[in-house]
Length: 151
Image (cartoon, rainbow, N blue to C red; front, side, top):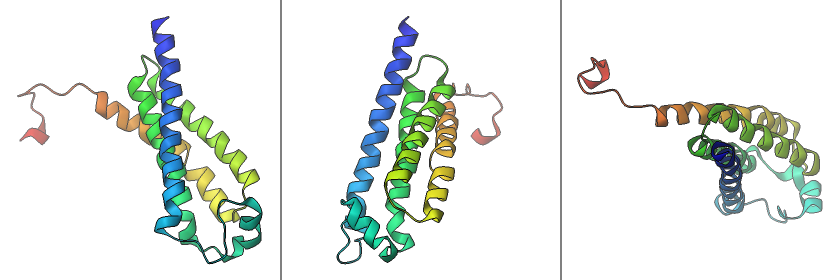
């Protein structure tokens, strides 16, 4: 029972942490790469009417928000989980992908961005988080074990 509760908390905390990373990048993005004059990124109608004015650089922070939000959320879930860590990291990736699909249907964006975002920002980042988590939680080799990197 304790491991189930810990895994549920891992997913909740992972989603929350990933969401914070995502929203932070979405909020600071327009300050780093300002939108063209007259484009209101906070208004769906304005965005739809002026999407043709946006250049590929304007999509950098949304992509980073989705990719890094998923990476951090999946890694946090992996590190907190009691067992099934890899599957929980992928679960964060799948939930994030579902959110990305929903956002792609609601927020206008060029097809190239939607494709890149859905293919590269979610499940690959969950896989990377599982790999990073495995390396971060692996027991270190004892001294003198013949590890070539220690030489």
